[in-house]
Length: 430
Picture 1 (cartoon, rainbow, N blue to C red):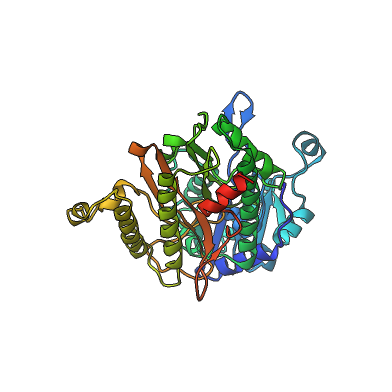
Picture 2 (tube, rainbow, N blue to C red):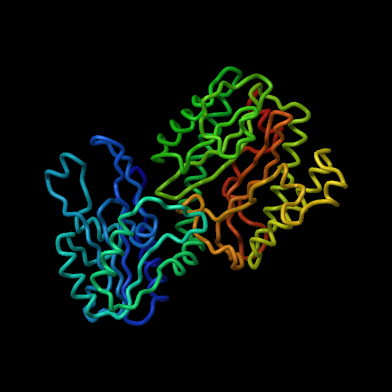
């Protein structure tokens, strides 16, 4: 791993919070992700399943976590099963976790090699009544591949059909949504790395550069600061490309007079950042570009203030829509007739701002969180309004990551990343 070792108290406390909500005499199992093939003997880079990482800190393939807080044997209340490491594996693949290293990483004392799992699992399954399985129930999930977790669940339920079955997801959705102090620190580190990438881009952009060259500047800075990759596929969209919400080709040349939408974030220790900024290719916004830019920034600032404990996500978006409507009227993009005749299910402002304003963020860029439940302190949200005007050849989106506070305005984790239009111009022309 490129990142510094994380204090294992994070994972110890996460497990305590999870097991406190389990049913009596129940057991929960979590699997690592597969390494996915590309072709021939090529594979995609390994990405750990965020749930097993959240509960153990283990960041390698072929790992299994078992939690059984009521187990008669105290040493079986927390178990890690790992792929056995040896000298051959160390030479060909690099060093894997030893039992001692696994304890240091996770705080779990009982570590077995995977070849012992069937025997140990049979013993503890005979001692429990309920088994918690982990299925992907995120509101954006669209999984077509059968995962290692899914294969394991299928085999487990076939072998032990008499056990009651419970779901880990309702517990994890609520736990992972509220961040600990250590987690907020890790997300702040990811945001700080993103800041360095953005400042590097500000000094690089000029007429004639290519979108993919800007992408490369970000990646260079990220990897120099212990990030292994982008937190998500980056969007570097110049000119009219910014009006394609998920434009990821990043293959066009940046022209004088255009502005570039940069939706880019670094990961750090599997935690995400999610930033959007706009850069004028020539170092200066046109009057119209700045007018729209400042309108979006005002919406972002007002929307941020609404992220307080007790706020309901759906109500929040209705209120943001009202602010956006006012700005669009001021820009001449809507008139009063448009608003009076709007479809309540698709308000007039949606013509120019068609996506949501905020989503949970953390180990996943679109992180866990139950949107029908009130917001709580220490939840981390993006704030990302936008105005998209294909007929004028540009779109504007601005995005920060913020932590909801018990009292007062949210804490902006991207407070040091330049965002005011005048500030960006000054930096580019200094």
